[in-house]
Each structure stands twice: as structure tokens, then as C-alpha cells.
Length: 295
Image (cartoon, rainbow, N blue to C red; front, side):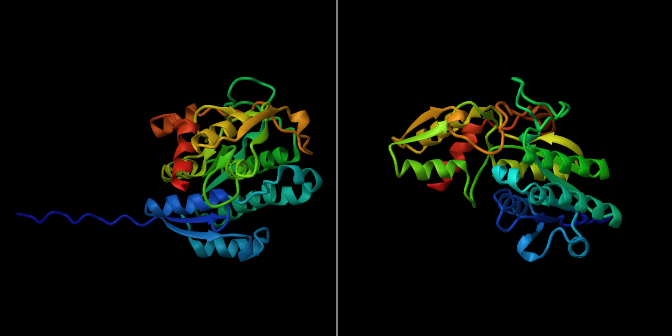
């Protein structure tokens, strides 16, 4: 009787997460990937000049990563209006360099993150991946240029994930800001005429890992199901936290900002849901998990 054949060991997948040490999304990616059995290495701006091609090439080659996750970006939307070149450096030049290096060394899959700000916000139906982008801000323009560079250079081995309105552990975010204000005042003013897709970073990290494990390519919308305006998100946050602070809805005109925000930037997640086998969970459920895990 022959002995049963020994099961071959599957090599542990390696991930390099840019922004993994300090970024809101990067920290979530490190936690989720490690929990799924990945070997994870972080690379951030404190480790060296990420826009230096020689430095970046050395680090990418040394990591021998199966998948590179780029969670580094210029996200200060209003500051981008006054510092367009700096925003372009991180939002376009860096992802372009990552794609070129990975293509030249023939190594690794790239997962890059983009934004709902690539859309004009003039429509009232959820934006699909195939809809035509029309950004209305420097931030949106530079992020669109970055995703186009990545997909143009690595059409079959890069995945661009558009996401929005992130909240989660590890760094300041809108939800934490609202909670802090509620502890200092009885009311808080929040705009009501901007509607989008609130997204939990740990959920986004899980979807990212699932798509990376499938080596998915192309453009994907990755947000929690449902939509809300900022005032609704603030109100739900305070209700779940048991706060008596009241949300006072105000228009964007009463809260002037340098960069124009899309009035409607809800993203359609049909494609993501089909890949996952079920729709992403609704944002209020994800928000509840986040808040209750923080208490």
C-alpha cells in the first residue's frame, strides 16, 4: 500500500505596504494582511525619499513582494489647491514610478488607491467604474492622473481601488473629529449638501486583500454599501455613541473651503459585490463595529 503523498506547503505571500506604519488605510492593511497569513513589510516617507527612483527601486527589489499596496497620497484636499506640484508628486509621480519599476523588474502586483473626487458630482446615480471622470479640484485631478498612469503601464497586473470618506482606527478621521467636538459642545455644525460613501478602513483592507489574492486587475469601486451626507454620518455617529450633542445641518456655502467638493460622489459597488460573492456591508453596520470596538 503506497503512502499518502505529503501535502505541499504553500509559500507565504509577501506584501509591501507603502504608508503602512502611520497611514489610516496603511495601518488597516498591515493588520488585515498579517491576520490573513501574509508576510508584511511597511515602507513610508520616514524611511527615505519615495520619489527617488534609485531608492524606490532598491526597496522594491529587496522586498521581493508578491503585491505592493500603495496607500501613500496627498490627501489634504484644500492644501492641494495652493500646492499642486506637491500633490502631484505623491498622487501621480509616485504611483507612476511604482508601476514603471515593477514593470522593469518584472516583479509583483500593484494595488493602488484612488478617490471619489475624480467625479464631478453633478449626477444623482451611483458612479460606476466605466463612467467618465471629471474632477473639479487639484486633488481629484492628480489622483485621476495617478490611476491612469498605473493602469496604462500595468494593465494586467495592477488594481486601482477608488474609495471614499474613510474612518477607522489609528489616525484622526471625520468620525473621531465629530466625537471630540461632541464632548466640548452641545451642538455641532455639519454640511448636508455633499453626499458620498462612508467607508470603514478595515473593511477596505479586507476587500483589498481578497482582490490581491485573486490578482484582480483594472478599476474597482471599493466602499461600504449605502450613502449619506456629512450631517447624516455625524448624526449616526453621535446616536451610536449615545451622545446628546445635536447636529445642525448647514450648506457648503456656510462652510467655505478652497477646493470644490463633489455634491454627489456615491460609488456603485456592483462589481466588487460580484467578486466577493455578496455586497459590501452597509456603512452604518461598519460604523457601529468601529465605534463599539473603540469603547
